[in-house]
Length: 264
Image (cartoon, rainbow, N blue to C red; front, side, top):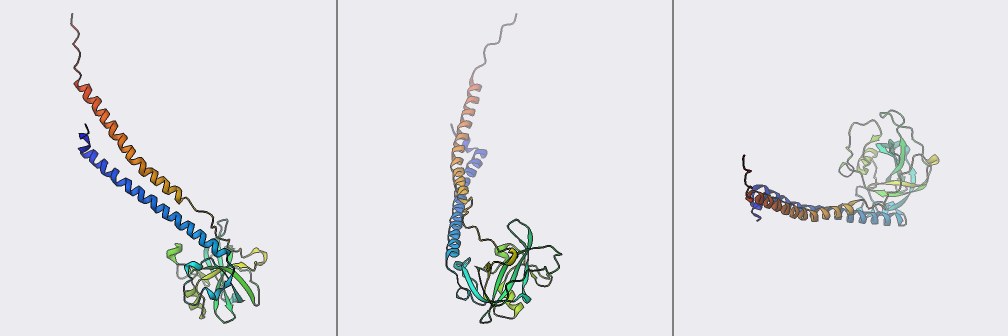
């Protein structure tokens, strides 16, 4: 009755079916883990943003990476901006997807150490090879507050660290690279400035990261599991249809032909 399942075609189809089911189940769990990671990341960002600002030097130090648990944590520092050594970060977009620069300005603390401050976004109005005109920050000693961020890397951002760029232009924000350029102790990572507000809203401050969107990963997980459940059902349907078709064919072949009409 089901001897056709031993044919080459059906053996291959059976093996494919048996392979698809665990693969789809595993893909579902992969999406579930991505969902859980996204939720945990959102919780971490929310907690960091809600916490009271701490002095930057409590969470980061020269030559040390920013602890993962402290990323997006609000920090503050007292000092003065060193605009003579500020640089711009190329190919950065604002909330309207316009391409421009991020302004990275060294902030010299009272103890002489430097905190890198991303003051925000400016448009690329002139030639890409020219250093853009940058609005000046507040002068004198001030207190700056921002979100603590880890040094940017090609692996994490997907941005290639191109060499040979025009003077005072960079692709990635790296406290190590800036420490070499400045010849000073630079705190690990950098901050995205949140206060004081710039005059005329320029540079445009980096917006607060969205930590409410959980993404589609849970829906994808359920989708993969539904596919995994549908595969054996579809296989059974195909087997029963093949059995019925073969039975009808065999029945038609066994039915004797009627008598030929008499000739006159």
